[in-house]
Amino acid sequence: MTDHYIAELHIDEDSLPVTSIEMQHERRVAVFDLLEENEFRPLESERGPYVLTLKMQDGRRLLFEVERTNGSPRGTYTISLVPFRRVIKDYFMICESYHNAIRTATSAQIEAIDMGRRGLHNEGSRMLSDALRNQVELGFNTSRRLFTLICALHRRTIR
Image (tube, rainbow, N blue to C red; front, side, top):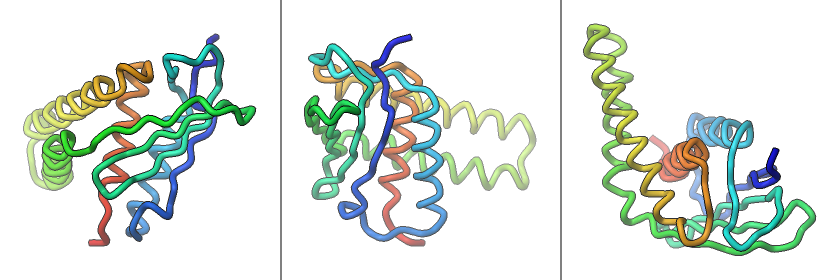
């Protein structure tokens, strides 16, 4: 078993506006899922495991502060969220369509919407892996879980 994984994940709450109880729950679930199983290796790090702190910066950038569990720093990586806006917006729209369809649509319609949702989720996951490719190596499922968390962080306003 490799020690290149995220053992702890923290979200800098000060960098996030107040959200609804539901969104706070969604974030906790995304963190739990990520910590359950992940593959995460900063390219210049020989050993893990890691503590990851996520911080939003000016609403347009996401900082990944990485250190080993023994406290030694492994780097800070920044990605722009601007390229993710379209896929996140489309992902939210299709998720809303999916939840609405559950009440009234046929199983074939629900399945078609869910296939589209998974496709957008995969696209966002690949975008994330590409954005970090020169800094961090991610497993595909880790990238998917991080994209879910980014979406949960991105939903910032109380409805």
